Amino acid sequence: MTRIFITRPIPDRGIRLLTDTFGPDAVIVAPNDLAITRDELLEGIRGADALLPILTDTVDATVMDAAGPQLKVIANYAVGFNNIDVAAATARGILVTNTPGVLTETTADLAWSLLMAAARRIGESERYLRAGLWKSWGPQLFLGVDVHGQTMGIYGMGRIGLAIAHRARGFGMRILYNDVNRLAPSSEVELGVVYADKPDFLAESDFISIHVPLLPETRHAFGEPEFRAMKKSAVLVNTSRGPVVDEAALARALKSGQIFAAGLDVYEDEPAVHPDLLECQNAVLVPHIGSATHETRSKMAHMAAQNIVARLKGQKPPNPVNPQVL
Ligand code: GLV
Ligand code: GLV
Image (cartoon, rainbow, N blue to C red):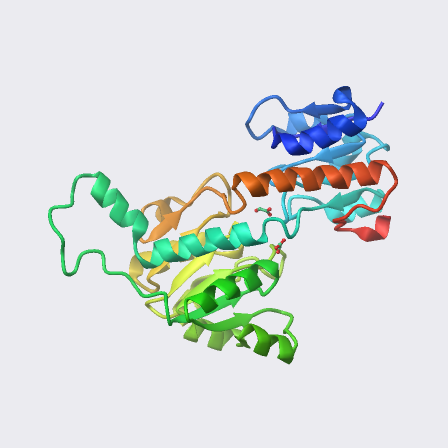
């Protein structure tokens, strides 16, 4: 009998597709709405044909081998797949899939929320109000920085980076981007974006929003030298992966006024947040909720399930990460 292991309860739409296709007994969902432990993962995956993990599950060769040779697909419930050893999966003929596209606009919305909140000191001023500290309207109370008309810097011009560019246009911003791949000149013109090499990008951007995957080359792409090269009025937003930013260096830059503010959705060692960052009033900190809307999480669940169905039925899965195994 088919066995599909889901490491944490996900929206019903995905589970329903799997139970409708393979029967209710084929689908095993980890019972608690908590990150499962490594032992629970090693136990749960035994005998599984398909694994549906979330981004906090480390899926390495040991986990794959614990499943047994019938494991055919790992359908990550995320667009990022740095939690999976894709090379080990490929070597075993196991397909890895992700959930691209459906969370693009939702994640861009969250990045934009962090950008606005950091620029206008929303977190800090809300804490002040709730603490009962507001005595009167003040000409100099909670002065922030303007967003409209400023220079937006997009680090990583993939799908989410493009969605940020669309929003920035509505705010009348000049848009710079930096990426290992340059867009075609005609696309740059059409999108109204200008490529800048990293030094110019850092020096000229009023806002920098990070949209690169976590790779050895992107680890700590933002650290002490980068913060030193940025404007003192700059705002940094990260909704990609935590280790792209050196958190200790960021906390120092925020404390010393080297940059104005930051908005973070992701952290180097989730769910831990660097204690120095927690002390920075000019950091807006949210718990990795980039794709967290009812609609998008439901679409992600359905998409991950579709990938499993296609793979187990010998059809072409829509979102292969390592299509060479097909
Ligand atoms: C969320 O971080 C994702 O990669 O989907
Ligand atoms: C990732 O970049 C996505 O938009 O799916």
